[in-house]
Length: 139
Image (cartoon, rainbow, N blue to C red; front, side, top):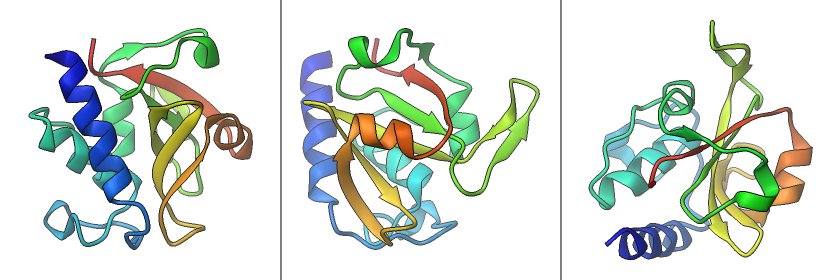
């Protein structure tokens, strides 16, 4: 059952490639446009899992994954500071962006700089901004 959900999640992510990015996109605007956290929220909702709306709140749930690159599995969420950080006591340096790991060393995310949903190398994504945490929702 879990494997089917993960495969569906990855397929849904790839179907969104090229969709426009809009900072602060509302859940009802999906799948026409996304910001990073509404993208992740939309995908997980389609497989029956409700996630919070913001990247910061999404980073507060799930299981922490360490070490990162060796243990990534499709469906894992990678959080970085990003351009606009949101802060709380657990993340005093801020969380500002989230990407979905889709396997084969790739992430898919709604990226503001690209103004659309893109696929990127996970290693490059992690180097681009300040890495914060990886969370596994599907355990």
